[in-house]
Image (cartoon, rainbow, N blue to C red; front, side, top):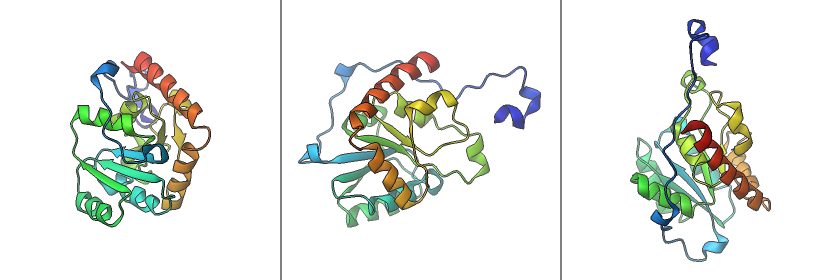
Length: 202
């Protein structure tokens, strides 16, 4: 997309969608204390800026379309922080984790069933913007659900579950599909994603 938009760069350019750190040692991480009856809970985790264009309001709306065994955890800061905090008071299935350190984020990943990136697609900026957060998600070993960003390289498609319809109901449907009975396959794909992204982008 960027090469077509800027033809002068076409011949002498290299597209880099992001770079990831070396894998963190498993022994350095201890999972967060999980909710009571964790085995019955599915935890959907969003980390990043709390802004509308990143799909945060959409995710709040999706929660009301999800069954009671789902929780949504949101970490980060931004202009929608108060709205997220208010929503968490009204619905105990929504947890606002605040702004986490990189190590705390990695701990949260280990507690999650699914990592979500519901970024909206209706701005010019999104055509050229590839969130580094998505590469971080893909190196977590946890299944990933994302909107289909136009800036995303095709080699990553096979590792990501996509949200077909960016509405609260559409996001809720995509979450449930990603956490379905084929979840063990999704874990296997997530582990393959982790290896692939480290090999191709480290």
